[in-house]
Length: 313
Image (tube, rainbow, N blue to C red; front, side):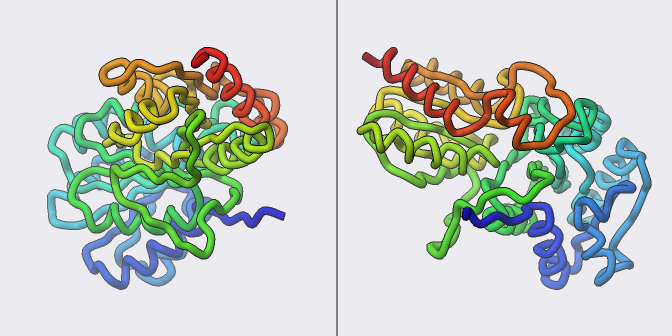
């Protein structure tokens, strides 16, 4: 049985601890505070918690003002509301003046499951990576989430941290987590091919690599937790040393991890590449069934690795 944990719950608990340490942290939310676990912060620091209801544009405008006043505002709601609905405010009021606003959003990708298409955030990485100056982080599990949230609090500038709805497999065990902004993590070494993954797909990539190992294929697995700034050095090194890459993400195929890796390879070291990602909107259903239907499980990642190995020759 693979151990799992909720990244959004880990975020809520980490935020409480950071609130004790940083008196200038304030938290802003909509009407989804229980779902984002920011109610934990509200219970301990009620004077620093602000509930705006479903008014995401207003939330981001106020967060910008608080940042200009020396506060560290953490804004939390669902991915689709925090990125799509408030994009103009993110662009003009946060990114352009490069303010110290921290956007930590939950219910990313199709793991929202039964909430359906309108609640599935699959374009957010493309949107947020397009904003100059934003640090964009997709933690692989709950353990890494804690480190990412602390890094956001301690680092000046706008942050986006992307979290899932359900509990997801823990990929960081007793050895701990070596999270550094912009520095990819090699979780498994190999010389035949490389899988570059982010978020919930990191555990899937490790499972695929284990299958490939049984076939005599040594597959490197890279946890690319930071998409902006991307660790281009890790991508180029993988291209030079393994000669074949696969990207795996629970996001639309355009504008996310696959696009960023492809851009890096095209500029620095052209290499065969396969992308495992969504190719359109999904439907409502149980998360595990949606992942299978839309090709985001370990067998599909392993198939992509076999394809890229054939192209490698």
